[in-house]
Length: 271
Image 1 (cartoon, rainbow, N blue to C red):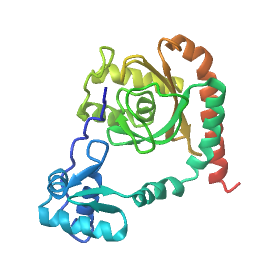
Image 2: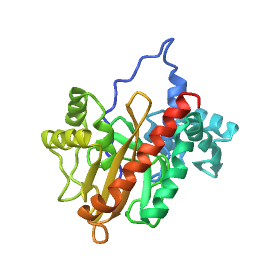
Image 3: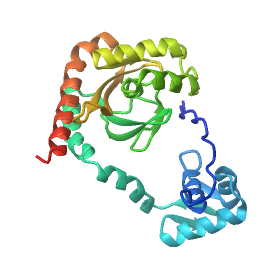
């Protein structure tokens, strides 16, 4: 079962000018056209997926090829490993991820369930760290994977840090498909769940993204108390039902999130 994140509502296209470089934007569109659904593409496919002419897509692909980010094999193009530099520049530019990984590894060793960290990006969460134990989902998750925020524990925990009016507006505008029979899609009901997560400092989602998947999340905060990421533990409902996850895993998860938050505060203070 493949659960791609629903596309975010497209923002109005900026007009070329001093603050907007159209050619650069087109280059990013070409890079984003590749993915799990299209790891290898012809020139025509790239142009269609990126919304460009064939001539424009060709110039960008040849430029990316010369820079080492794209390779051509016959008529097909694909990304090269060098493209990872772009993502790792983000990860290495922030101290949080280096601080979080050892704590996440210790948590996984203790609870024997997968642990992930994610940040909010539009209507989605983006995975920035993941320490798996075994495959419990039908979808493959790794750094850079995106899932809808409205029906995930980390997403709701991250939405909980937004002002209520902004959170309500995002929920109303975002696609909210029912992935399972349990998926909550009503904005008012979702706001109640998110407000509860804000008050209690954690969030549990029971089989709303995928049948059999239970997920528990807690916030990672900066020195000002703002949520900068969310940490979660995921498990199988038949092995770790919600009540058991709250009893056994919630205290450990919150300890790990608090520890990472404290390390982040110390790093920010120059300690």
